[in-house]
View (cartoon, rainbow, N blue to C red):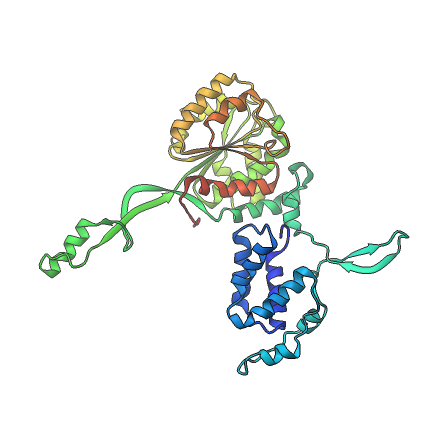
Length: 396
């Protein structure tokens, strides 16, 4: 199912089921779309049970469902209902035919998303044989997300940048010292319980419970904008803007000096935000001093933002500072941050090994080393902070 439009597949598959007499509607379509997105479908059996559990509501429809599924995925005989199937239907059932369902059923097997441009088989003589097969293609946005940053133009980068904000559907949270009333809480709230006991002769008839209040956990991201990161700089700025605009985050860019970009990237217009951030960084596409800039952040008043935060460092690891200085800075960061993620655009390449001295000094203090060479990788990065913390909420 990789690259397949799940919504289109669900609508077409349920339409075939309705044509075969299975009682299925929009609720079943929505359940099927959610089920397809819930887990990996790595086998035919997994796909069968996923669709069956999501769509089927009555045991009487099981035979029709099996025929439709076999016709779609096994190229079985046509799906036209036989006389036995018509008579086996309960008398109180009313079958409403769907427009185009009969033609779809009579056409036999084939994938229900075969409305994409067909592929024509050509024989050895170069003449089309007339046999047409469905050509599976991912959506345009999904295809672009798998391409390296240097192969994208400005318009394509802007389209994918908007999708990054949608990837931030979950945000990490932290537990605070405050408590709020909650019937499912484990702790008894003494003051409210005693106050209510005054109405019942000091007998605690009503027990008030409370739970700890959770607050959004801050994310702090540092992005390398040196010469070796020229191809990734613009895409990483869009990722930082997604963090800065969706929820509480602090973002910085560094090459030889450190620049705070949080106010610039919180602009409502993406084009204006990137332009302001680009103008604010005066040392972009120069040398790299990771240890110096990380130490400068820890020593500044913005270093308090790192306490209990998820720190994200985006760099290829090329550093002009000695590895010993980076080791000392990462030790301080490890004691202050809740989790540390390191993004390396080369981490996803086959045979990659962190042979750079700076990467070797930083990795022992990192929770995860993640590839970040495409927008698909950045979307995975956007979902990771909520996973490493174990507690999350939806951004407001």
